Image (cartoon, rainbow, N blue to C red):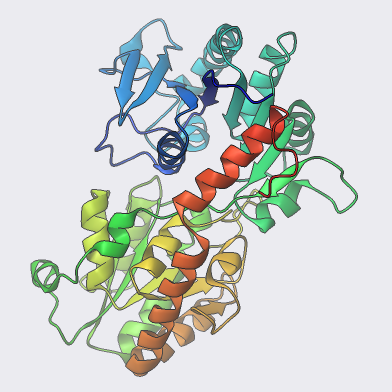
Length: 411
């Protein structure tokens, strides 16, 4: 069905930057759609995302049309989306839980309205996939679902989302394995997210070390991510007690915000390492890029949380790798796919084991040539496997296949 007319895609997400300089919201959906739009101008995109106070309901960011839906009568009291993210907002806010029915209803209404004008729906996350599936039932537009993480406790909801999707994309083989069995004939593909070029291009910043109070001789360990259970930063702090006792000229910087931040700060204080562990909170991406280039070792100490969820991919790890950092990561979830085999482009340690984590980090502290070699290998791996150009091309190929074009095109 090749045609010169534009192909309209409605991209539905609950995670999208509210502005170009939004510090809180992950950018991976925005990065993907912006790269797809740049690659093939035959595709026209409209992003549907939740509204928040102070935002325009119809907007344009970096050339992408944004349509925001208000889900509470009082826009100023909307609190389900954004902030720490919908799952954490639901756990910690009664008002957010009360807004959930209105959110689902408004999302369904908006999807139904979009189906009259679009050629294809691309939905991010399981729960919106189910809502969009019901809303698209009569229109029957091709529906592509992107799964970024899986809650094993919601098995029926997960399977329902798959039934509605014509094609399902996963951010890692690990994520796919959580939903798809070997005998399942559902159309799927693993498409790895990419990295922001600013992380590859950022220059080493000795000035930043001085601003943070570190000398050029200090070994600087860095972790980046939301302060939530599955990120495992509490395990890193347990490991830090051993590391900082053995290696005096070592410090740890953690960048990110989240519901566990106060508890982590208290954990560091109680352990007597508060002066050597610096919590910087959320910072602009440009600052994070500089911080990675100023550091020596990146740590991603993820665990499986109490619901059985683990890191599905780990964009922060990829950004550290392309910055040329040696990485120490937990051998769990998508992290092992990102880093590769142990010793190939980083070190993998047993998840949740603070002593193993401390040993892996200590190995790189003691052997600077080893960490430099791993950092170079990590950058090569990231540049080869994790680019937005590659992800965008593969996603566009899925669109064409879902629309009946280029059925043999490689994804």
